[in-house]
Each structure stands twice: as C-alpha cells, then as structure tokens.
Length: 334
Image (cartoon, rainbow, N blue to C red; front, side, top):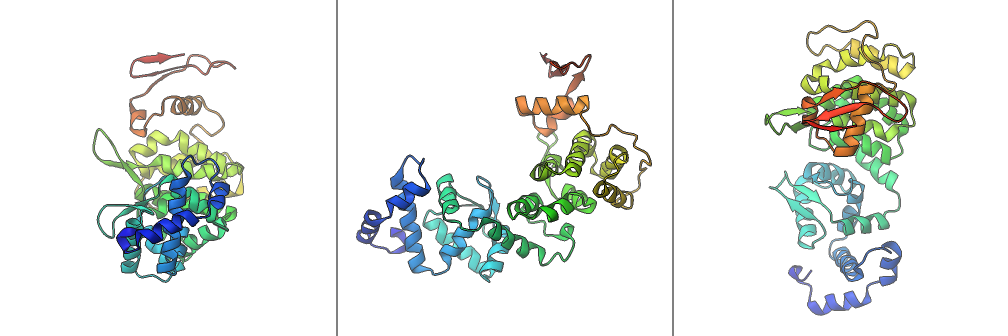
C-alpha cells in the first residue's frame, strides 16, 4: 500500500480501525488475525482509489482454489462483467499484484494468476451468490460458442474447467448434456494434454476428462460413461482417435437414452479412418477386475498416468476380502 503513495500514518490508522469482529466471524480458524486485518485494509484502500477494482477482484473467487489461472480466462470474465479491454485487465492485475492481493507469474498477456489460501478464503467469505458469479463466466465463454461448447477457445482454461463451472453454477441439466456430447469429449482430448515425462511428448489428459464426470455421479448414465472411459484409459492414452470405438464396444449393451444418443454421435463421427464395433464386444462398465485394481492402486500410491503403461497385473482369485495380486516395478502387494 505504501508503494502506491498512501502514507504510513493512514495505513496504521486503518489497521487499528479494521473490523476484527468481521474477520474473526468469517475466518474463525485462521491463526494470524493481523495478516487477515492487513488484507482487509488493503482491499478497503483499493476500493477508495479504484471504484470497480474491488468488484473485479471479488469475482476471482469463482476460480478453483489453489490453481494457476491463465490471464486469458480472467480477461474473458472481466470483459463480460466490467466491459474491460485486454490492456485494462493487464493494468488492473498489476495493481492487484502491487497491493499483494494476488500473484502473477510469466510474461504479459500469458501470465498465470494465483491467490494465497487466505485471500481465497476471504473472497469466499465476502461472496454472496457464487452460482450467479459462475454463471457470469459461463455466459462470457459461451456467448461466442452458439450451441456448440466444442468450439470454445483453447486458452488453457475453458476445456479444462467448463464442467467445473457448470457444476458450481448449479447447471446440472447443461452439465449432463455436455458429458454425453461426443464432440465435446473428442475435442477436449485434443486440446487438453500433459507432457510424458520420459518421452517428452504431449499425450491426451484422459484423467481430466474422467474427472469431469465426478461432478455428476448421482446420474446413472454419467457413472456408466465414466466407467467406460476408465476401462479404455490405456487405449485412449496411446491413440485418442480410439475413443469412439471404445465407447461403442463397451456401451452398446446399455439402453439408456442419453447413452444411446452419445453412441449415435460416436458412430457418426468422421475423425480418421477406423473400424467401429457394431456389438458390445469389449468389457462393459459394472465392476470389472481391471477397473477395481487400477482405482485401488491410484488411491494407494498416487500413480501418474504415464506409469500405467509399465504395470503388470496378476489376478488369480477374487473374494470379498481380496481383489487379487498386483505388481508394480517388482514390488508386490497382496
């Protein structure tokens, strides 16, 4: 604050007058109330100097806690909520950084923004209508997509987090349709990738796609589709164009309308030349041994996707108390 020309005397007075009762009520478990008080004072000073800056800052609460957010995503949001141009977004981010209200990493226009946990918790406590705020971001992104989410921008955020914001906005019906849209699934696999540590090449982030379905697991159709993707994990990881064949081979035996619609889209897709199943010829969702073992191991040892290729499975028996035997890099566990 002193860097922006505010006198130390005014800062000290503001710190003494800060509403500690509000801070204790909203952040009861935070160990250092003095830090929380300084945050509140910094925001109060910001409000007195820049009338709309605090409104824009408070909107950052909709982004997932602890994640690095591309500047492009914030530009999309603030252009919609504050009619801000790209250059003005950049200027405001610098102001917030100089007030220690957020962190900026990287070069201009391609920077990553993050909040400290205290900053996020404070914004969360100040937020009045989170579903509405999330819906503002959805409107900002989708107004240029017309009816096809798959045509959204590949800005490092949209494809990664659209499902999250639909969930946070309470848009369950729209999320259901998104997760049963084959073009969305295929396009997400094309645009969301991770770097293979050993090969140094981009591979589709299948885990990101699978994770989207966690937001609607009370929906039977969604659970079946997620399970089918899990069973197809290794195949899709090596060749994402196999998505259609994997879904058809595993889900054709299901009669649910949403699943049948998804399969109809998959069978009509023209992404490359390939053979597609016309019967349910692959393992279907419903508790297969491979899926149980893979989920168990990921929960136990936090395996990374690229390690799945080197796993060896041995499954001699299955009982109520034992799933079988699995082996990873010569280490056995029963």
